[in-house]
Image 1 (cartoon, rainbow, N blue to C red):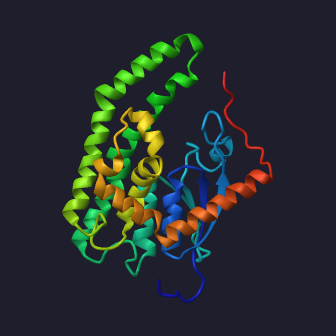
Image 2: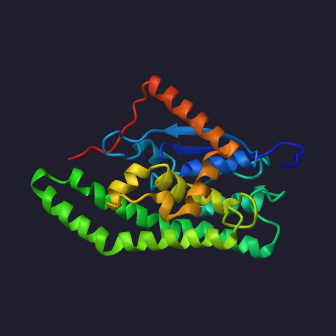
Image 3: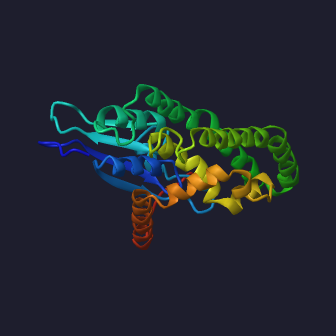
Length: 265
């Protein structure tokens, strides 16, 4: 990124472990912006985020990105929703087209994936996970019936839709033929899809096999997605933020933080 003269805007990213916030962190790193990260930890049993996040936004969800503008006349803002945050960063902080192609047609493709990732794909994975985990949180006497009903829901609808989307993405990579979703280099489309495809699936192969009850080899089922996932995993800037956040989480745990969570009935 070209060096900018004068003061620059600063960013504070509210980050939760194993969350969508990681790809916003990756974008901040790729765009070489001046950022800091405020770390929160999930409850080890319920997997819920802490109540402290509600002090930052009424929904208490990450990512939350604060922007402190260099221009003192502009008040700070807080942005939420991954696709919206990414679009804002691309529009305002990517003058050299690091993540947003120069070609308007390819820009349109990137914009599509920003919304597709959250609008069509992610909710299917969340539904699969909730249905798989539901039996663990219901009263003991309801565990068997809950397991039966949620398995029926997954088998009857969510698994079919999830596989359809995975096959769709596999085909899009094959059609593009470059190893990336748009053009011939990493774009914001790849960054957005890194969470639902790489982190949720190929970096969680044992977990996804349990949830889907499908023991087939994902590398065989989706070879292009597997190859793309390796590209993501070994990208130097992605590796850098993962190591950085592992260290941040370890340090925070050693400091024994006292997060408050929803009380379970």
